[in-house]
Length: 255
Ligand code: ATP
Image 1 (cartoon, protein in one colour):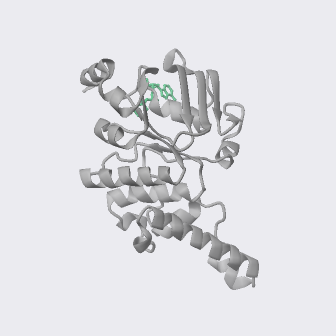
Image 2 (tube, rainbow, N blue to C red):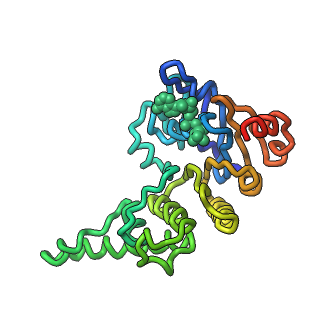
C-alpha cells in the first residue's frame, strides 16, 4: 500500500556533545506503510523518532514529515499536520476512565461538568457529544469499547498499551509513531497488537514503530530499518532483513 512520501530524511544527524546518537540517516516512508525500527539499545531509535515528531531539532541534515520541514517547525504545528506519537513509558491518567483518557487526546475536549451545571451551553453540549462519540469510536477501534468506564489502572497491561493507541488515534493522525508499544506484553497481547497495527494500516494510516521483538517486526511490517550505532545498518522488506547477515550478527552481538 505504498503511496505518497510521508517522511523523507536526508543525512539526518543528532549529536549530544560528542555522542553521535544518529548519524547520516536517509529514509523514505510512504503513505500506508508500516515501518519497523529495530536495533540494539542505544542505537538511536528514540532519538530518530524524536526528530521525526519534532520534539528535538536535528544537528544536521533535513527531515520533511507530511510536507512540513521539521526542526524549523514548532512541535504543535507538526502535530497539527497529522503526526502523533506514543511514548515508551505509559502516560495514562490512572484514575481516569479509559474513555476520559481518550477524550484528553482529542482536539475537542468536553467542557467540565461544573461549567454545564452553572450555565446553559447548548453548543458545549453539542461539542461534548461529538467528542464523546469520537472517543468511543477510537476505543472501539482498539477493541476497548466495553471497558470505556473502567479506570485506566483497572485495565490489564496489554489493554493499557492499547488505550494509549486509542488516545493517539483521537488526534486523527496521518502518521502514528509508536515507541515500543509491545514492550512488556505477553505473546497473545503482542499478536493482538500486531493485528491491530495491520488493521490501522489497512485504513490508510502510516505507522512507524520501534520494537525489540524481531519476530513481531518481521510479522507486522512492510518495511524495516535496522539502526546500529546511529546508522542505518539495513533497510528492506521483512524477508530481506531476515536474510541479512549483518543484522543477524548485530543482534547476536547485542543479545
Ligand atoms: P533504547 O532501545 O535503549 O531506547 P535507542 O535506540 O532508542 O535505545 P537512543 O535513546 O536514541 O537509543 O540513544 C542513542 C544514543 O544517544 C545513546 O548513546 C544515548 O545515550 C544517547 N543520548 C540519547 N539522548 C541523549 C541526551 N538527551 N543527551 C545525551 N545523550 C543522549
